Length: 336
Image: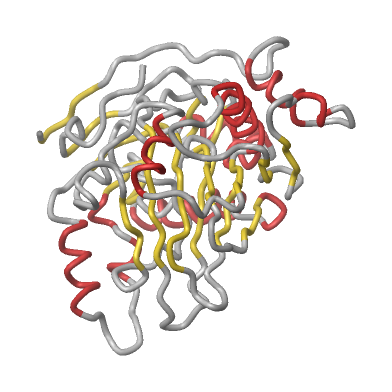
């Protein structure tokens, strides 16, 4: 599908009102009594504004429903959660466990993956060492990503996540007002790796992956500040798939993107995870960006990702995303 397709407009909910999900999530995760909030899992913070380790749940199709419900609450509160020691998982187990969090997408809009739901992220094909939110070039941005370590390098290979809701909250009111009026064009043809010079050039596997990644063109205009559909928090929707801001020149777009991204990726707004065998990371793709640190030389690194379907982002002023190019309906159905 080509051309400009306008999606429905709906009003955002107010943020941080007493009794709303974001307030409840914060209450469950903060304060000295936080340990009493979870009856079926253990939750330990690993960062001040993002990240927690969850214990007491065995991932898979048979995971305790009460534990899964609390895991989701912890995810909304902490944006990314980590499960250790899940060595028993197969691809089928990972798919089944992710499906407990919501309907799954296909592996990717353009990359085949396993043909069902699992996308291998292989360092021999591509390194995701640039700040991004997953698959923002389609209208139905995934809600949740579930990443499992398959093969890890002997050193390096950490991943960093940033809290995009906190980044917006800490912006100066003038920048909040500016961001709230902006819309950004995201495209898969603006892949960060395509424009990055690499020592020794690009090998055949990388060239083949990039060709597959860009074989179909997707382009979507999103509000720069989206309202989280579950917590009502406003969050910045940016990252390396942004090509430009609507109505601004390339030069101004680049400068403004760098400014806003600097607030997102401030170290105090991040958490860095050192992977171990059996680790799973689950993040709220509606309130985070992440960066896979490529500091492991030519050592192999393989991860498997499954994504949960999301809705069409709604801006802080009630405006919704607009499809410019591409039809993502085969990739993902819209979350209810």
